[in-house]
Image (tube, rainbow, N blue to C red; front, side):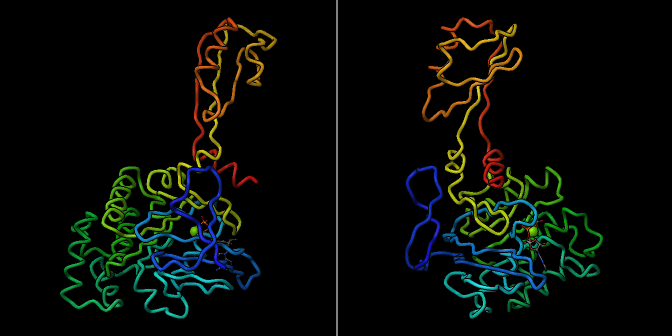
Amino acid sequence: MKATADLDHEDTPKLSIEKGEKNMTDAITIHQLTKTYLSGTVALKGITFSIKAGEFFALLGPNGAGKTTAINIITGLANKTGGDALLFGKDVVKDYREARALVGLVPQEFNVDQFEKVSKVLYFNGGYFGLSRPERFNRIGRLLKDLSLEEKRDTKFRELSGGMKRKLLIARALIHDPPILILDEPTAGVDVETRRFLWDYFRQLNRQGKTILLTTHYIEEAEELCQRIAVINKGEIVALDKKQNLLALLERETMTLHLKRKIGRIPKQLQKYHPQEQDAIITIEYNPQKEEAQEILDAIQAAKLPLLKIETSRTTLEDVFLHLTKK
Ligand SMILES: Nc1ncnc2c1ncn2[C@@H]1O[C@H](COP(=O)(O)OP(=O)(O)OP(=O)(O)O)[C@@H](O)[C@H]1O
Ligand SMILES: [Mg+2]
Protein backbone atom coordinates (compact mmCIF):
# COMPACT_ATOMS: atom_id res chain seq x y z
CA MET A 1 0.00 0.00 0.00
CA LYS A 2 1.36 3.40 -0.97
CA ALA A 3 0.62 6.72 0.62
CA THR A 4 0.55 9.73 -1.64
CA ALA A 5 -0.20 13.34 -0.99
CA ASP A 6 -3.39 14.41 -2.69
CA LEU A 7 -3.67 17.36 -5.05
CA ASP A 8 -7.41 17.63 -5.50
CA HIS A 9 -8.89 17.27 -2.10
CA GLU A 10 -11.50 19.13 -0.15
CA ASP A 11 -10.56 22.41 1.48
CA THR A 12 -9.83 21.06 4.91
CA PRO A 13 -6.88 22.63 6.67
CA LYS A 14 -5.07 19.43 7.51
CA LEU A 15 -2.33 17.22 6.19
CA SER A 16 -3.73 15.34 3.24
CA ILE A 17 -2.50 11.80 2.86
CA GLU A 18 -4.26 9.47 0.49
CA LYS A 19 -3.84 5.72 0.16
CA GLY A 20 -3.89 4.31 -3.34
CA GLU A 21 -1.98 2.55 -6.08
CA LYS A 22 0.87 4.06 -8.07
CA ASN A 23 -0.41 6.79 -10.31
CA MET A 24 1.32 6.90 -13.71
CA THR A 25 0.41 10.54 -14.29
CA ASP A 26 2.66 11.47 -11.39
CA ALA A 27 5.77 13.21 -12.63
CA ILE A 28 7.60 12.49 -9.38
CA THR A 29 6.77 9.75 -6.90
CA ILE A 30 8.72 9.50 -3.67
CA HIS A 31 7.83 6.65 -1.35
CA GLN A 32 9.32 6.05 2.11
CA LEU A 33 12.66 7.41 0.95
CA THR A 34 15.42 7.08 3.51
CA LYS A 35 19.05 8.13 3.53
CA THR A 36 21.73 7.53 6.11
CA TYR A 37 25.15 8.87 5.11
CA LEU A 38 28.28 6.80 5.81
CA SER A 39 29.08 9.26 8.60
CA GLY A 40 25.94 7.97 10.35
CA THR A 41 23.88 11.12 9.71
CA VAL A 42 20.25 10.21 9.09
CA ALA A 43 19.30 12.80 6.47
CA LEU A 44 15.92 11.34 5.36
CA LYS A 45 13.69 9.32 7.68
CA GLY A 46 11.18 7.95 5.16
CA ILE A 47 9.62 10.77 3.16
CA THR A 48 6.60 10.21 0.92
CA PHE A 49 4.99 12.55 -1.58
CA SER A 50 4.05 12.70 -5.23
CA ILE A 51 3.93 15.53 -7.71
CA LYS A 52 1.46 15.57 -10.58
CA ALA A 53 2.57 16.37 -14.12
CA GLY A 54 2.38 20.12 -14.62
CA GLU A 55 2.53 20.99 -10.94
CA PHE A 56 4.77 23.63 -9.33
CA PHE A 57 5.76 22.10 -5.99
CA ALA A 58 7.94 23.39 -3.15
CA LEU A 59 10.02 21.48 -0.65
CA LEU A 60 10.42 24.08 2.06
CA GLY A 61 12.72 23.55 5.00
CA PRO A 62 15.53 25.00 7.10
CA ASN A 63 19.26 24.32 6.56
CA GLY A 64 20.09 20.65 6.95
CA ALA A 65 16.47 19.50 6.61
CA GLY A 66 17.35 17.02 3.85
CA LYS A 67 16.21 18.92 0.73
CA THR A 68 19.42 18.55 -1.29
CA THR A 69 19.77 14.93 -0.20
CA ALA A 70 16.28 14.17 -1.57
CA ILE A 71 17.03 15.95 -4.83
CA ASN A 72 20.38 14.27 -5.23
CA ILE A 73 18.71 10.88 -4.90
CA ILE A 74 16.00 11.81 -7.43
CA THR A 75 18.64 12.87 -9.96
CA GLY A 76 21.00 9.97 -9.33
CA LEU A 77 23.75 12.01 -7.63
CA ALA A 78 23.36 10.17 -4.31
CA ASN A 79 22.38 6.63 -3.40
CA LYS A 80 19.26 6.07 -1.35
CA THR A 81 19.31 3.82 1.71
CA GLY A 82 15.69 2.69 1.30
CA GLY A 83 12.39 3.45 -0.36
CA ASP A 84 11.67 4.45 -3.96
CA ALA A 85 11.92 7.42 -6.26
CA LEU A 86 10.25 7.37 -9.68
CA LEU A 87 10.06 9.89 -12.51
CA PHE A 88 7.02 9.31 -14.71
CA GLY A 89 7.07 5.74 -13.41
CA LYS A 90 10.78 5.21 -14.17
CA ASP A 91 12.82 4.09 -11.18
CA VAL A 92 15.76 6.43 -10.61
CA VAL A 93 18.02 3.46 -9.85
CA LYS A 94 16.74 0.59 -12.04
CA ASP A 95 15.86 2.78 -15.05
CA TYR A 96 18.59 5.33 -14.42
CA ARG A 97 19.20 6.50 -18.00
CA GLU A 98 15.54 6.94 -18.88
CA ALA A 99 14.79 8.64 -15.58
CA ARG A 100 17.79 10.98 -15.88
CA ALA A 101 16.71 12.12 -19.35
CA LEU A 102 13.34 13.24 -17.97
CA VAL A 103 14.79 15.78 -15.56
CA GLY A 104 16.90 18.92 -15.60
CA LEU A 105 18.67 19.83 -12.37
CA VAL A 106 19.81 23.24 -11.20
CA PRO A 107 22.09 22.28 -8.29
CA GLN A 108 22.64 24.34 -5.18
CA GLU A 109 26.43 24.43 -5.73
CA PHE A 110 28.15 25.67 -8.91
CA ASN A 111 29.53 22.42 -10.35
CA VAL A 112 30.99 23.83 -13.56
CA ASP A 113 34.51 23.96 -14.96
CA GLN A 114 35.62 27.50 -14.04
CA PHE A 115 37.55 27.99 -17.29
CA GLU A 116 34.83 26.79 -19.67
CA LYS A 117 32.99 29.25 -21.87
CA VAL A 118 29.23 29.70 -21.43
CA SER A 119 28.28 28.28 -24.84
CA LYS A 120 30.64 25.29 -24.34
CA VAL A 121 29.08 24.39 -20.99
CA LEU A 122 25.72 24.18 -22.73
CA TYR A 123 27.10 22.45 -25.82
CA PHE A 124 28.74 19.64 -23.80
CA ASN A 125 25.66 19.08 -21.72
CA GLY A 126 23.52 18.86 -24.88
CA GLY A 127 25.91 16.14 -26.07
CA TYR A 128 25.50 14.27 -22.81
CA PHE A 129 21.79 14.00 -23.54
CA GLY A 130 22.36 12.95 -27.16
CA LEU A 131 21.27 16.13 -28.93
CA SER A 132 22.54 16.60 -32.49
CA ARG A 133 24.82 19.58 -33.28
CA PRO A 134 22.05 21.64 -34.96
CA GLU A 135 19.66 20.86 -32.09
CA ARG A 136 22.27 21.98 -29.59
CA PHE A 137 22.97 25.26 -31.39
CA ASN A 138 19.25 25.87 -31.67
CA ARG A 139 18.62 25.26 -27.96
CA ILE A 140 21.69 27.26 -26.87
CA GLY A 141 20.55 30.30 -28.91
CA ARG A 142 17.06 30.11 -27.49
CA LEU A 143 18.11 29.64 -23.85
CA LEU A 144 20.76 32.38 -23.90
CA LYS A 145 18.17 34.73 -25.34
CA ASP A 146 15.44 33.81 -22.84
CA LEU A 147 17.86 34.21 -19.92
CA SER A 148 19.47 37.43 -21.23
CA LEU A 149 22.90 35.82 -21.44
CA GLU A 150 23.52 36.31 -25.17
CA GLU A 151 26.34 38.80 -24.62
CA LYS A 152 28.12 36.34 -22.33
CA ARG A 153 28.18 33.51 -24.84
CA ASP A 154 31.99 33.49 -25.09
CA THR A 155 32.71 34.47 -21.49
CA LYS A 156 34.41 32.00 -19.16
CA PHE A 157 32.31 30.72 -16.27
CA ARG A 158 34.63 32.25 -13.65
CA GLU A 159 34.14 35.69 -15.22
CA LEU A 160 30.37 35.66 -14.76
CA SER A 161 28.64 37.38 -11.85
CA GLY A 162 26.86 35.19 -9.28
CA GLY A 163 23.45 35.88 -10.83
CA MET A 164 24.75 35.05 -14.33
CA LYS A 165 26.27 31.80 -13.06
CA ARG A 166 22.89 30.85 -11.64
CA LYS A 167 21.22 31.64 -14.99
CA LEU A 168 23.75 29.50 -16.83
CA LEU A 169 22.99 26.54 -14.55
CA ILE A 170 19.31 27.04 -15.36
CA ALA A 171 20.05 27.07 -19.11
CA ARG A 172 22.16 23.94 -18.69
CA ALA A 173 19.34 22.14 -16.88
CA LEU A 174 16.98 22.96 -19.75
CA ILE A 175 19.26 22.11 -22.69
CA HIS A 176 17.48 18.82 -23.43
CA ASP A 177 14.04 20.35 -22.83
CA PRO A 178 13.12 17.89 -20.03
CA PRO A 179 9.52 17.64 -18.79
CA ILE A 180 10.66 17.96 -15.16
CA LEU A 181 12.79 20.78 -13.79
CA ILE A 182 14.33 20.56 -10.32
CA LEU A 183 15.57 23.77 -8.76
CA ASP A 184 17.69 23.49 -5.61
CA GLU A 185 17.64 26.97 -4.03
CA PRO A 186 17.66 28.63 -7.46
CA THR A 187 17.72 32.22 -6.27
CA ALA A 188 20.26 31.92 -3.45
CA GLY A 189 22.58 34.90 -3.67
CA VAL A 190 20.85 36.74 -6.53
CA ASP A 191 19.67 40.34 -6.31
CA VAL A 192 16.01 41.35 -6.08
CA GLU A 193 15.70 42.24 -9.77
CA THR A 194 17.21 38.96 -10.97
CA ARG A 195 15.08 37.04 -8.49
CA ARG A 196 11.92 38.64 -9.97
CA PHE A 197 13.18 37.88 -13.47
CA LEU A 198 13.81 34.24 -12.59
CA TRP A 199 10.45 33.86 -10.86
CA ASP A 200 8.74 35.10 -14.03
CA TYR A 201 10.80 32.72 -16.11
CA PHE A 202 9.94 29.73 -13.88
CA ARG A 203 6.23 30.63 -13.99
CA GLN A 204 6.42 30.79 -17.77
CA LEU A 205 8.09 27.36 -17.95
CA ASN A 206 5.40 25.94 -15.68
CA ARG A 207 2.64 27.47 -17.85
CA GLN A 208 4.27 25.79 -20.85
CA GLY A 209 3.78 22.47 -19.06
CA LYS A 210 6.98 21.77 -17.16
CA THR A 211 6.63 20.10 -13.78
CA ILE A 212 8.78 22.01 -11.32
CA LEU A 213 10.11 20.90 -7.96
CA LEU A 214 11.73 23.75 -6.07
CA THR A 215 13.58 23.65 -2.77
CA THR A 216 13.91 26.75 -0.72
CA HIS A 217 14.09 28.04 2.81
CA TYR A 218 12.88 31.32 1.48
CA ILE A 219 9.18 31.30 2.30
CA GLU A 220 8.24 34.14 -0.01
CA GLU A 221 9.57 32.11 -2.92
CA ALA A 222 7.37 29.10 -2.15
CA GLU A 223 4.42 31.40 -1.56
CA GLU A 224 4.95 33.29 -4.85
CA LEU A 225 5.46 30.31 -7.10
CA CYS A 226 4.05 27.07 -5.82
CA GLN A 227 0.64 25.44 -5.77
CA ARG A 228 1.52 22.89 -3.10
CA ILE A 229 4.15 22.96 -0.41
CA ALA A 230 5.76 20.18 1.60
CA VAL A 231 7.46 21.39 4.75
CA ILE A 232 10.49 19.26 5.58
CA ASN A 233 12.36 19.34 8.87
CA LYS A 234 15.08 17.01 10.18
CA GLY A 235 14.47 14.48 7.40
CA GLU A 236 10.70 14.32 7.85
CA ILE A 237 7.76 15.87 6.02
CA VAL A 238 5.90 17.74 8.74
CA ALA A 239 3.14 19.14 6.51
CA LEU A 240 2.05 18.85 2.92
CA ASP A 241 -0.83 20.69 1.41
CA LYS A 242 -2.04 23.34 -0.98
CA LYS A 243 -0.53 26.69 -0.14
CA GLN A 244 -3.83 28.20 0.97
CA ASN A 245 -4.62 25.20 3.20
CA LEU A 246 -1.25 25.47 4.90
CA LEU A 247 -2.11 29.06 5.65
CA ALA A 248 -5.57 28.13 6.89
CA LEU A 249 -3.97 25.57 9.18
CA LEU A 250 -2.93 28.39 11.43
CA GLU A 251 -5.25 31.07 10.26
CA ARG A 252 -5.24 33.61 13.01
CA GLU A 253 -5.65 37.32 12.91
CA THR A 254 -4.56 39.66 15.61
CA MET A 255 -6.36 42.88 16.47
CA THR A 256 -4.22 45.31 18.43
CA LEU A 257 -6.01 48.09 20.29
CA HIS A 258 -3.84 51.06 21.22
CA LEU A 259 -5.44 52.95 24.12
CA LYS A 260 -4.93 56.49 25.38
CA ARG A 261 -4.23 55.07 28.82
CA LYS A 262 -3.93 51.77 30.65
CA ILE A 263 -7.33 50.58 31.85
CA GLY A 264 -6.25 47.79 34.19
CA ARG A 265 -9.20 45.48 33.63
CA ILE A 266 -10.77 43.85 30.58
CA PRO A 267 -14.32 45.12 29.91
CA LYS A 268 -16.95 42.36 30.16
CA GLN A 269 -17.97 42.83 26.50
CA LEU A 270 -14.50 41.64 25.40
CA GLN A 271 -13.87 38.86 27.91
CA LYS A 272 -15.12 36.07 25.65
CA TYR A 273 -12.29 36.87 23.18
CA HIS A 274 -9.63 36.30 25.90
CA PRO A 275 -7.70 39.50 25.22
CA GLN A 276 -4.22 40.19 26.59
CA GLU A 277 -3.45 43.56 28.09
CA GLN A 278 -0.02 45.06 28.47
CA ASP A 279 0.42 48.71 29.38
CA ALA A 280 -2.02 50.60 27.16
CA ILE A 281 -2.25 47.91 24.48
CA ILE A 282 -4.85 45.16 24.23
CA THR A 283 -4.41 42.32 21.75
CA ILE A 284 -7.17 39.98 20.61
CA GLU A 285 -6.35 36.90 18.58
CA TYR A 286 -9.14 35.30 16.62
CA ASN A 287 -9.77 32.78 13.87
CA PRO A 288 -11.45 34.65 10.99
CA GLN A 289 -13.12 31.42 9.88
CA LYS A 290 -14.95 31.22 13.20
CA GLU A 291 -15.32 34.79 14.41
CA GLU A 292 -16.40 37.86 12.50
CA ALA A 293 -14.15 40.89 12.84
CA GLN A 294 -17.29 43.05 12.80
CA GLU A 295 -18.66 41.31 15.88
CA ILE A 296 -15.43 42.02 17.76
CA LEU A 297 -15.43 45.63 16.58
CA ASP A 298 -19.02 46.01 17.84
CA ALA A 299 -17.96 44.64 21.22
CA ILE A 300 -15.03 47.07 21.33
CA GLN A 301 -17.40 49.95 20.62
CA ALA A 302 -19.85 48.76 23.30
CA ALA A 303 -16.98 48.60 25.81
CA LYS A 304 -16.36 52.37 25.29
CA LEU A 305 -12.58 52.04 25.43
CA PRO A 306 -10.35 55.15 25.25
CA LEU A 307 -9.15 54.13 21.78
CA LEU A 308 -6.28 55.71 19.87
CA LYS A 309 -6.15 53.27 16.96
CA ILE A 310 -6.78 49.65 15.94
CA GLU A 311 -4.39 47.53 13.88
CA THR A 312 -4.91 44.07 12.42
CA SER A 313 -2.35 41.60 11.12
CA ARG A 314 -2.66 38.26 9.33
CA THR A 315 -0.80 35.00 9.76
CA THR A 316 1.79 34.49 7.06
CA LEU A 317 3.28 31.33 5.67
CA GLU A 318 6.31 32.24 7.77
CA ASP A 319 4.24 31.87 10.96
CA VAL A 320 2.96 28.49 9.74
CA PHE A 321 6.49 27.39 8.94
CA LEU A 322 7.89 28.43 12.31
CA HIS A 323 5.01 26.71 14.08
CA LEU A 324 5.49 23.46 12.14
CA THR A 325 9.27 23.28 12.43
CA LYS A 326 9.21 24.13 16.16
CA LYS A 327 7.12 21.10 17.01
N1 LIG B 1 27.80 14.04 1.69
C1 LIG B 1 27.36 14.04 2.94
N2 LIG B 1 27.90 13.25 3.88
C2 LIG B 1 27.47 13.24 5.15
N3 LIG B 1 26.41 13.97 5.58
C3 LIG B 1 25.82 14.77 4.69
C4 LIG B 1 26.23 14.85 3.33
N4 LIG B 1 25.44 15.73 2.68
C5 LIG B 1 24.57 16.17 3.59
N5 LIG B 1 24.77 15.61 4.79
C6 LIG B 1 23.97 15.82 6.02
O1 LIG B 1 22.63 15.47 5.76
C7 LIG B 1 21.75 16.39 6.38
C8 LIG B 1 20.83 17.01 5.31
O2 LIG B 1 21.63 17.82 4.46
P1 LIG B 1 21.05 18.45 3.12
O3 LIG B 1 22.19 19.03 2.37
O4 LIG B 1 20.21 17.45 2.43
O5 LIG B 1 20.11 19.60 3.71
P2 LIG B 1 19.35 20.80 2.98
O6 LIG B 1 17.94 20.75 3.42
O7 LIG B 1 19.62 20.78 1.54
O8 LIG B 1 20.05 22.07 3.66
P3 LIG B 1 20.42 23.53 3.04
O9 LIG B 1 19.19 24.36 3.14
O10 LIG B 1 21.48 24.02 4.01
O11 LIG B 1 20.93 23.35 1.65
C9 LIG B 1 22.61 17.39 7.13
O12 LIG B 1 22.69 16.96 8.45
C10 LIG B 1 23.95 17.27 6.43
O13 LIG B 1 25.01 17.57 7.32
MG1 LIG C 1 20.49 22.09 0.25
